[in-house]
Image (cartoon, rainbow, N blue to C red):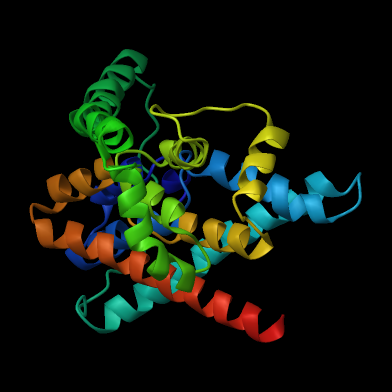
Length: 281
């Protein structure tokens, strides 16, 4: 779980130390409930603009940080709950006992550790990411630049998804951005900004105030922000993580299950949150 806070693919690889196949699969299938470094910038930006923006000056950073902490804690809750459900259903089986054994102390072999870390982890993960990033970048460009009538393919897809997205308290462009952001979570916000601004390439803005103005002008509210943060936590893993799951388990069905579980949870959470909000407001 802690490794997943850095990279879910690394967390999946780390699950190989589990003693039993059941525990390994539980760790792999639930690792995506930990927000990785690719999702933290998006979460922090939205929390700063909308959550922190609703309190007085001097408390904005604290409130924003508390909101991010709440998201992490929610991810832990989902990890434990889904693990319990899976262990009682499709992954029912024996659980190993926890044994703490202290090995003999030896002088670390720094060179061997560095080389093995680079070859077994860094290059493997980067290779998987590159294999998907290049074609995915071409797909995003084509979606934004190929016109059918007066609209781009991106706009047509967003309009098609908009009714479903509204049930989740989102809009069609947001949902499309999450789908096109499958290669890397870092590009979800740039895709959203690109869509709103009508650009043909990904947009990266550093000014939080400017980003907030664009989002608010395109109909974002506190409900939108909350649901975006929830769906950022509870949606399918990135393509690198999915490929890593296939590599570690040897079967695509576990990648499909890892894709479906958090996505279903995210759709349910956003839909329930939106319904409660409309009832109260």
